[in-house]
Length: 92
Image (cartoon, rainbow, N blue to C red; front, side, top):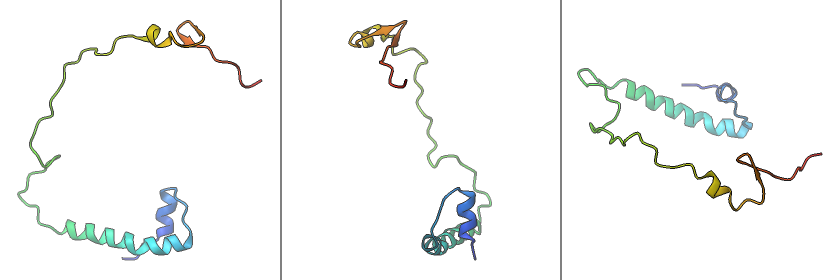
């Protein structure tokens, strides 16, 4: 399987040197070859699963756990206005 690594890199918006492309070509071919091998496995009669374990995720109650602590958190700020931090102007 011959792969144009430079084309794949361009599609992925990755800049590669010629040396990197030469090194990645065989690696990418190996990965795709492995995927081809997996596609040949007979999965007839095997139920599709999204997760190998048939377990339900625990759910938590949909309640507010953090209260509004803005005044407490802004108490140590040198200057605030309308609930916002006031900072010195740095760009003229």
